Length: 66
Image (cartoon, rainbow, N blue to C red; front, top):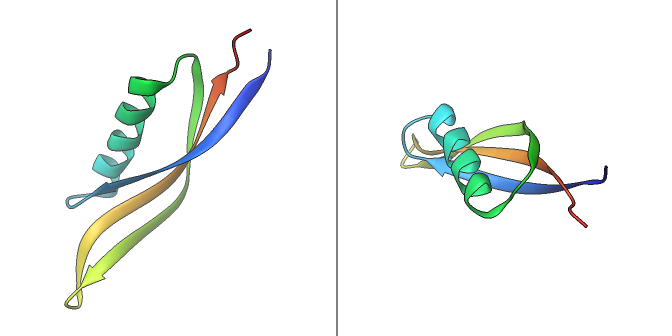
């Protein structure tokens, strides 16, 4: 088996959990054979000294089909 890993960034105005869910939904909509999703970074965008957006960077591994 051969796998490929891509990096996706998910955002949410509400939480890191929702940002992660957004990554998962987007990955499932366009990729087949996903074997792992690993969140590698958490950060926030600030606006007017307040948290504006929660962000996660995630590695998505999936099988390469031949």
